[in-house]
Image (tube, rainbow, N blue to C red; front, top):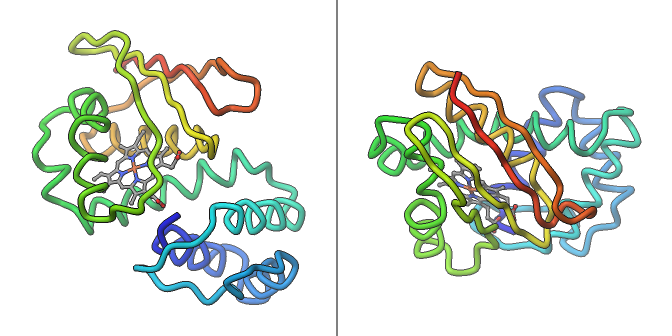
Length: 179
Ligand code: HEM
């Protein structure tokens, strides 16, 4: 997992919970990296899972809810860092249906070691989109947060239904309807 995902996460934790909580979750996680992340580095996904688990224990907020909030913050980071990728689209459904074939394809070129999910488009109209998310990291709620913010970016909103195809969340169906 790319360092920027860790650095932005810890910044948000500091903002919302304070530096003591950042120190506490880093200490409890016993991280191989020691928690000294750089945005361009690459770290094991298990470190993110440990940090999330300890933050969830501390805050009593579920990992799913933490990932949703974090993704909503991360969208702004992506939009500020890669405006060219987003500005190419004039519509949220077009953008979301192009994650697999364009957006993440470009990300993989920039960061060959990025660990990205797959989003298979099952059905698409101008106002609806059905996609299957697949990833061993089961960060489907991170995807949901990014989708919410994508609609907001276009001053729009959507009803998004998630159905787990696999119980562990490594395969999830997203049914998106623009409001
Ligand atoms: C992960 C880039 C848009 C879904 C990531 C990562 C990067 C990235 C750098 C981290 C990879 C790693 O740590 O190895 C981008 C850029 C985007 C974009 C530049 C737009 C300009 C989206 C959108 C979605 C999405 C709109 C909405 C569904 C995800 C998910 C992950 C992810 C779910 C977590 C990894 C996983 O589930 O396996 N993306 N992304 N991305 N992205 Fe995107």
